[in-house]
Image (cartoon, rainbow, N blue to C red):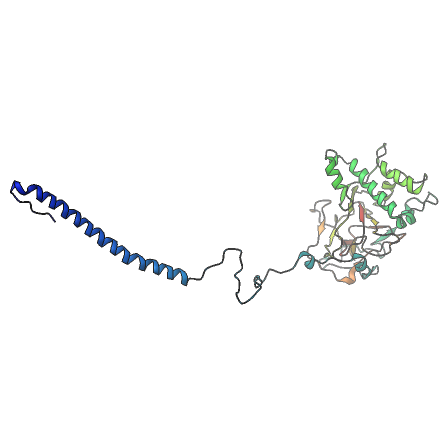
Length: 362
């Protein structure tokens, strides 16, 4: 509020001092009012905030289970219907495969299987007894007397290991696709628990299977065939127009797996073209299943469509076969080899394998 100033010049200076003093007091009064107002408002506001904070339930930090004060242990987390509290071992438990295969039947006399879409009027009926054919290693070289190949192979694990490893090394070292691989890759690919593929043909003038030749001579004597002769003898069982493809298959061990039925090509190029399996058992003097692929004998030839890519497998996804139709070929001395035409059977890796490996020649 403006303060009137006397018109007399004698009183102007004291009045100026009084005016200045009153202005200061006026400002102090306003500041005091504001301070008291702030003190009255803020405590109530902070008290409300404190009460509001204390009344809210605190959320636990992420990934931390809320503890129950009345319980010493935390409750198990809830799971959605599609989640299961099991380990991989529980989902597909380990097996003693040696015991498991003893519970399985060979079932060589299984009935023939038919598909709903079989053309019964046009399709070729497969003669009985031709679906799966056993062969002995002794029959490969009938002109070599006292070779004892089959007996040696089935009773001497060291011979089998040396034979298999030398075959793998010779094929690896003579396959162009593997030429530029480093030594570390070679070591890994040649581990006995890994599969390996290449070609079985040995028609060059120079000896291809050098290590295999040495193994055969060491175990069977000087009269033994060369490694190349051994490979060609087995390959000849494939019949006419073979693909010359070779693979050493290990597969899944110590677990039971579902069958996966398929044909390798769905063809028999020359009409007599076969797939040949050479089994390597896990133990000496073995007689049982789990070495060779399992098979289902067909009533009618099952030839893949013309549009199907040659040498691509024909896969029967989700096909369930009753156990009465499943043949589990038996390995034993005199039955080291199994042969079949790919149009006569559908086949699968054994649901329970008990072997070192099986070699497939095509």
